[in-house]
Amino acid sequence: MTRGNLTMPDHSHRAMSMLTQHESTVNSFYLAFFGRPADPAGMTFWAQHLDINGGNLAFITDAFANSEEARVRFGTDSAAERIAEIYQQLFNRATDAVGLAYWTDVLEQGHASMADVAVAIMNGAQGSDARLSALRQGAADALPRRWRNRAASTPATLRSKPRACWCAR
Image 1 (cartoon, one colour):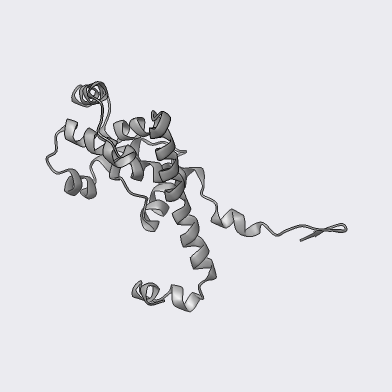
Image 2 (tube, rainbow, N blue to C red):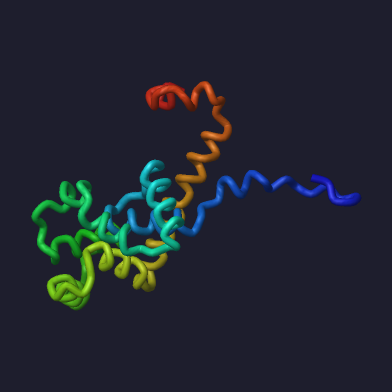
């Protein structure tokens, strides 16, 4: 791009590769609740839902807590077991007794859903927990950029083929 006598670098590709606020929020939910980044279809679906609903998190929180993945992953785990798993997947450590008692009571008293608690634990991270959480969020947020960049650089004929084609490349 040229402006007067200056040639400006073309950054138009950046807009396509940057995450929206809603996509980053979706990734946060996936990391906190399921311990993994969002898959492309889930990212798109939930980010669009948040966009349509003005960023209201109520539906996504309820949907995550009652999803098939949650039922399979957590089964009949107690609240304390699920909280311990959240700490392990977010911070790679066991929960402290005070935190476990507090969050278990919040759940058992019905003051928050498990998804709310998972996100609150992630957002309340401090020290090394906060640094690890930020690194994981950054890595999770980088995945959609890589998917988009790969899709943008892949010929349309390959993008339209079954997923097995990606593995063979």
